[in-house]
Image (cartoon, rainbow, N blue to C red):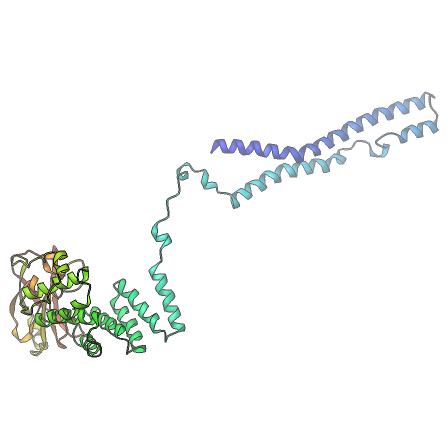
Length: 410
């Protein structure tokens, strides 16, 4: 910083020399000229007094002097040049400093900032999803009949895990294009994802069944109807649906292999329907399916109802006892359904009670156990349902978990 100040001062000095030198030099020349003229005037006066020259010659020589007698040296005559020099000396440095402060970068002189600029992150060049969604929402306000726009918005929300918003956006798209089978299935899936249980039942299943009536080979509908049957424990129906899907898939693709693995899982859980025959190329490339082991987690849960809520118990209501990951997807990893009239009761939750083949208790270290009495029979929490949630527990816990249903869903 000191070096900069010294260099700046030298540069200002050089800059000032250009305007100040002519001004100061003109002042000195004026003083010198005035002094010379004064001496010559005195000599002329002395010559005239001594009779060397007469008045006519005196007047002629006086006219040749640079400064007439009326403009003899006077301090006031030098004041404009001095003021001009002073203003230049003050204004030039002051102007330079002010210009640097406003247009320059003083902080650049800080040694702590003299580092290479950081490389821009990927986010700097990527698309901000929130901004993209805001822009899309604004456009849909101007064009509310844009079904493709609503569908795009629903998919964007779903990718962010905002399942309620995804459901609402896809519903608007579906209402605008009710005969579009792909959109109908997509809306049905969004409906299921927006419920706490993530179960494909009720309206979502009915929408998928309607699509399959019109288009029996709709691949996504077959996949989801199989998931719905699997969730309900109807493993034969799940295998049947997935068997219908398999021939439409490339035999040695990852998707077909995944479907075959889930068929094998449904068979191990009690399904007796055989899988469709595999082609030779499939047998050559297929990977062995991991067998379900009986040594997985088994959580014993004892459920009872608080005496203060006995008067609110509807014997015809449905009781759900479930386990979900402490941190992760909200979908239950294991769930048991039964009549609420059976309270108190004891259930065992294990891998065989998962809603999806690839979402099991054994995949997570800690889980939360919950119990809910649902008047509607739907696994999703609704106002007036009775429920309880445990603290996070180890998935391999051997001691029973005691749950007392003691709260009401607002």
